[in-house]
Amino acid sequence: MVCSCNYFKPEQKSQSIARVGKNYLYKSDIAKLVPAGTSKEDSLLLVRDFIDRWASQKLLIEAAERNLSDAKKREYNALIKQYKIDLYTSAYIEEVVKNTVDTVVSQEELKKYYEENKENFKANGTLVRLRYVNLSRENPRFEIIKNKFFNYSKKDKKFWDTYALQCKSFAMNDSVWVDMSQVYVKLPVITPENRDEIIRPGKKMQIQSNDDTYLIKVTNVLDKNQILPFEYSKPTLKEVLLNKRKLELIKKFEKDITNDAIKNNDYEIYK
Image 1 (cartoon, rainbow, N blue to C red):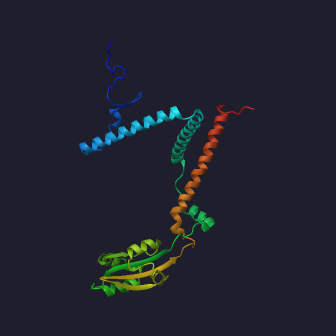
Image 2 (tube, rainbow, N blue to C red):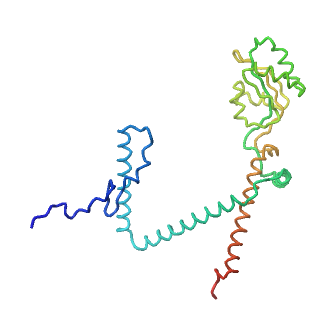
């Protein structure tokens, strides 16, 4: 009797592109693998790399199942089972919380929590409130702009709406606290070396740098480890309060679902 040596090889299944043992990889498994517009050469490389990694994983898991001790496999199977439980329950609770928790936090709630916990809200670095304009010294309206800047008044809004556009850059809202790192970016004439000299509450200055003239007025300074202002802390306060609500809701949900199961005789402890 004469047989082909291919007789005992597993028959290729329809649409399969690779096989490892009894595991097959199909065309449908790589249908969305290659992004549109990829060249033929790059496409072949991507597909071949994917197939090689798929084969390696299949061979490794088969080797692991053959060679790991039964004790180890029981240990890892328990971990896999627990991971599935944790993944499903956390995803379900997240959906419940997302659809239930009240995301509106009133100003009164924020203020109350801030007053009770302000020692926990301290600056990690220097914060500054300032305003500045950067314009050419040759600007024909330079002296008027300078005078209006250092004698700033809200009544001059129309003036600034017109002449701020003549400045190379500007920031007129000195009620907002900004981190010192942002100041260095916006005002390159201020450096860590001259910061202490310039960044002082109430400091007014005119600094020339090549063709740029900077007019700067520092309103206030908050040093590292000082308590953060309420307005600056509001985003963090809201996040903290929402997280507290979520935790409280999760505890209540877990308690309610257990109580309902007891009530419906779906959960009982045998003595």
